[in-house]
Image 1 (cartoon, rainbow, N blue to C red):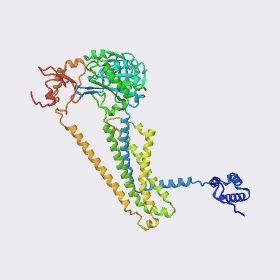
Image 2 (tube, one colour):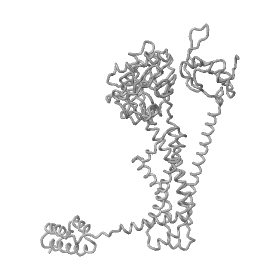
Image 3 (tube, one colour):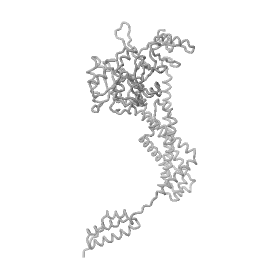
Image 4 (cartoon, helix red, strand yellow):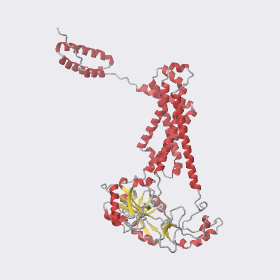
Length: 630
């Protein structure tokens, strides 16, 4: 008789039974099913045996046969609670070590977070506008016949804006003119005195269609439609009107033009590349110029004092609009100017860090300063991390006997590693909490150092908090990794027979020494950089400028009356025994001095050179050394 070949039951059904049944009943149930399967296969065939085996497996998945999982949450909680207690006990036992470790890391984290806040703030300039990605400033580049750049300016001639609106009606543009030559006088009849205001802008009515400066009072669509209207900020409203409602009140500009308050805007955020206090419609700029004695034309293609911004529709890219600007220049600029002028766009978000043109509204910051800040933050974090790892490792090796006792009492290597990780992460989070306090304490001084206003609200942004917590967690893991792996590998018998401290050599010692050398090297580099920066600062502040700058007081003279009597005013000043010398001067030394045409008698071509108007007391007042004349 031929021997029949036996086949195994379906593997997937067998595996399902193993996954579901508790080990205490699995052997019995599985054994009975296998015995029945092989018997049926012998007498009834393999196919029927398979089907009945699957049926009986499914029938065996009863509630009473399920696996019973042992709940260990209570034990786990007790274990982690014990780890934390031991960690706090060690911190209390080694107070000096704990203070140095926590405070050193907290100081490093605080420095890094302050620099990070600074970098984020600088990169966030002008991004609060709802259409920031489609707003551009149009700049002008003036070149000579040989291709040399004569002037690269952030501002444009008066006529560019209206011509752009005519040629490209779907491109919204706004012109902004800031009073550069003087601070306009603003009066309110109920106040005893007026104020010379610096942040006065004359703008087109499209201003609020481009920029997202919210109004707390007034309608942005109509606030600038009336030529005799003015929009002020909240701080200016408080300055002139106190707690009274400023809407409808009248302010007088230069004792000549009455302006009605039609809107109150929130104060301009610090991370804006320009800041205004007053917005006056550009419609009446001609009358203002006539009233102030300005003889320059406020229309035309030559004088370029206005900053022009455009809001591009989505169908335009920056490249395509720059191509259009080339055609625009050729079509609209007067003959002789088109070949010398080039217009190009600048992204709004790039102006603060990537633009340093002539006639910027406010000075920006170089992109290299951000790169330096990032490098310093990285170095500080690296030094603080290495110091933290070294101190943690050095202290951990003093606890070898504790590790030995835990192993003897049944603690596994994974639990020892978890203990060291928990202590290290706890130290890092304590340092982080202390760092937040240091930031709040040092923020005003840091703001003065970097000359900008930072906001603590950046620290509570969800994405920023998540990144910081992940970094702190990663630092805790890295700091605890080395001592955890090193100490958990010790043999308990050797440890208990020793003095209770670990004596590591070879790679372990080399690793610690390498960290110390790296930390020392980075510290030396930072010290050298600090010395270089200090010397550069000393050079900038102490180098002779060719005139006396110390003990000089500049008094801006505003108003027509006092200008006409400036000589009498100067003589009155000189009567004061504390005034050694005095002179009148048209512009402030150290600031941009306007170019004026100078020529030599007998030559036809005058040259535009920076020039000042002053009097004969200038040389004595500023202690200027003459190389010729007297």
